[in-house]
Length: 541
Image 1 (tube, rainbow, N blue to C red):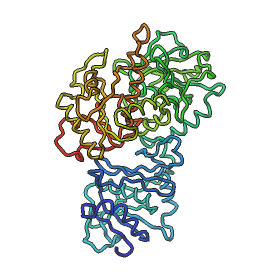
Image 2: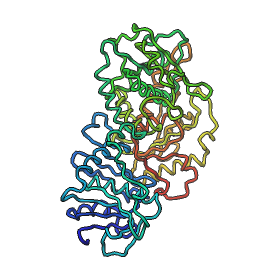
Image 3: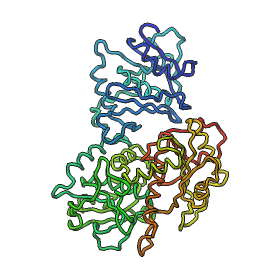
Image 4: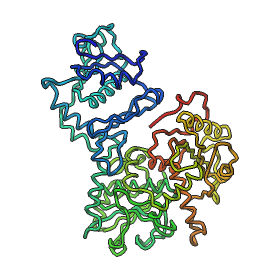
């Protein structure tokens, strides 16, 4: 300690990261300035301060990744209805801190935290004049971590680049952005911004069921609700496709200011979606009092997202908002992924983004019937309903009644399968889990062998897996159609409930990850040539 300034060197010293990052702020609260030169990198969970640190009504969640710290600062009061606390890309805190910074900068008694590179005449300490700067990437990564600590410690954030590290100040190349208020940059600041979800949930509640309200329906199977002149087509595919498609419809609902609804009916599904999932913050149910079947015309769009079939132009460009303004109901059945198309509406991010996870929580919660099935399955497989476990989802093909794909589809072989099981075993050990490893797959043979306990320490569902888009033969529902649907949702919930999840390429497990919000996820592709310790290949979102 010297002259009221705490200087924290690069954490390659013998001082634990946790002490330099957290305890240093606590032991010197009266320091006029704290200067930090660091470029933190987290290589294992043990290095990171992962416990929530409460600051007033905010929660600062620190999580580790394969590159550097990631901060999530979320206003708990404004997001609790959507359960989006922990969204790693929440940005509300940036606007809040920008306003606080402007109000406190230069005030008498203000305290500062400085991200520095080269001390010059500003930073004084007793140690050797070291730089701790490295390249531009390291410098900017480090100063962003210091900004996070500035928010946490309620200090004014500054940047200082001086001698001997740099021949001129940073201001020679970059200046602070003071061109416009922070609020103008907040909405849709990145692909995972979620403020629009809460805003739309409030608007939806105020407008659904109102006289003259206009609706947009994500549908799967027309039944008696959707009226159109074409053939009774489904365009539903599996659960991954259905969820991906309905999230894109929600996006168009926000863009067109229509009330968003979901409808699953015959001939695509033997029972309504409400049998397994109920609304959460956005009530998407088609209710009789809306009398949608009588509110004609219905503007209907059906589309399967394949390269050879372009998206209907009115949806791709957003022109449907005006073109179909005369339609009380716009109904869309598709499985489009907006990452592959430039379409109107708020961004959703990648298929496993925080924005999509927040949308899932805003739309769905398990029904009591599904929750009972999930509790029973966990008790049977794991001994009780609360014990943590590792789950593996293998999309290999070979569903009952379906084609058997080449195992090379997922770079798979017997050796690769064993490597995935080894990965899962390492994960269980690293998290001190003693429960069996859960393996769920669409491959009928492997599923059967796992259920018969042919692999020690491995458990799986005793229910037969079938693709839910194959429950109707074209002449009516198959006898086990309802059981097939329930099995799919129970598998989904079991994957979502896992502490750690290993996956192959599949829309099904992407939905499970949206539901579960897993902080511990590993693509099984990385297990196929496992030759390094667990903490080298484990990565966290």
